[in-house]
Length: 477
Image (cartoon, rainbow, N blue to C red; front, side, top):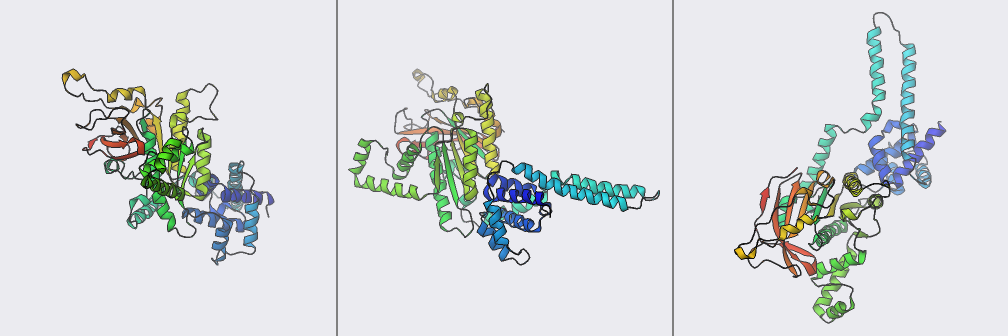
């Protein structure tokens, strides 16, 4: 019995039970025969199978699979699983221990190869063939590490078939991805699929946070419907709203306004006004009850990209995050940034990490961004003396403030700005309760770019159709 390698294997298994990052890496890089201890091999096999079908990894779940599968059952399995689970302290040395497991396996294979070489009968006739045999065996050993991080085309096809089966068996495509439920926009987005990063940029007061609140509510309601009929062992779905600007109360206030169609805030005069209107009060109470029941978490404390990644990782361990909203990119810092790092470098790191979060957590990241001052000019019209409204210029990908790598990493980049050149009678001044805004998608990696007009009901943080025709254009990808 190899005590040292047993300890490494138990440490790695404990990390995989507790840490979703370690779980992802372990399932990707380790193979069954990497484990020397037969019991550890069985536990790893069950953990990987549970992970592959998106089940929560618990001591009870692992034990149940082992106890109900004759070929996996072994003596004192529950005691060993409990022991491994309880031994967890942290995942700081996970990578080191994982490499030790793989290196130990490679060492054993090399020892066997050397022993075989000693007993091989080399002669002047077969020497070439025998050397090629040993070289092939050595190549196979050395390829173990690199092969474990690759995905075969056959595996990808199998995953694609599983996805197709899920789509075809679903009555509503919102169970598969995220949609805005605004027909004009969904013709652009189609479905925001997991692993994608979407960026919406706007100047202050143009409605980008309101749009994100509206989207988060729609997806959270869909998650609730899924969770209400969830099967045992399945991860419940949820939405995570990370605000680097507003606090949780302000976000909730906007959600109440959105659902109740009242201009709700925690200011006393507005509360008293609503309380005097029974219909409005009932609408507010219904909205509050619905929001309280939604699988929706708001994080207003994570201000750097490392904290955000940690918050998403922690939440993903127990729940299947359908949507992560980030408000907004330019407010995110970095604890690991060098002292002399400029804004460009920090935003580059932030956007790359947001894309990594989407891929690693298999979720949709919808990130807001501050638009540059150049967007202000898009709402201007030509001189009124001519009697004709001027045609606004189109925004460019570089019109995001400190845009850095945003336009390269994101799957879509869109702009939201007030449209002062809308239909007759539709124009709205800056302080009006209702505005006609233009939603302009400049980059769409998986579809068509273009723009459309939307009706922005400011007091209610709601967007509805603007009644205008869509205009499609080639994507700038």
